[in-house]
Amino acid sequence: GPRRMGDRMQVLSDAELVALTREGNLQAFNSLAERWDSSLYRFACRLLGNPEDARDVCQEALTKAYLNIQRLRDPAKFKSWVHHILLNLCRDRHRSGKSRVATQAYAEEAPGELEVVASGRETTSPDRDAQRSALAGILGEVLDRLPSEQREAILLREYQGFTSREIAEIT
Image 1 (spheres, helix red, strand yellow):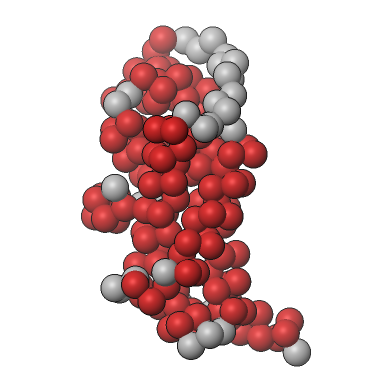
Image 2 (spheres, one colour):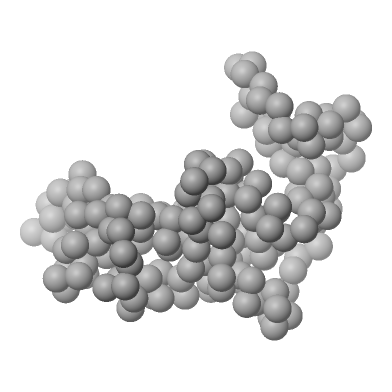
């Protein structure tokens, strides 16, 4: 049944799912959407600062991707492509002033911790995740002050795990 089909889809690569989508297989596109939805959502939240707006642009980005799937030159690059679509939608929203940017209260952190983030040094301690979440608030404040290109690149690398090459493609 459809459940078995969905399980089988999960082992397929993005390129294979794109090929199936192009043949009219909607289940294949659903698998792509499921695969990248949370990554897109986190990225949109960071860019827009508002969960409702983030949901909207994710929906919009996935719809656009589906409608334009024939135009994707390299099916293996679906991930970068759909994040690029999302980024453009977020930029449009900022330009038109449509986003309801939530003013977030950031915890006061020690200035020393801020320098770690600013310098981008990797810490490899076991409590790295805990440290990351503690720094997330202050990092948000730092990001807000950066020019948008720099901010986007940092978000893509830090939160979405893209390589420098992929970031260049997306932006």
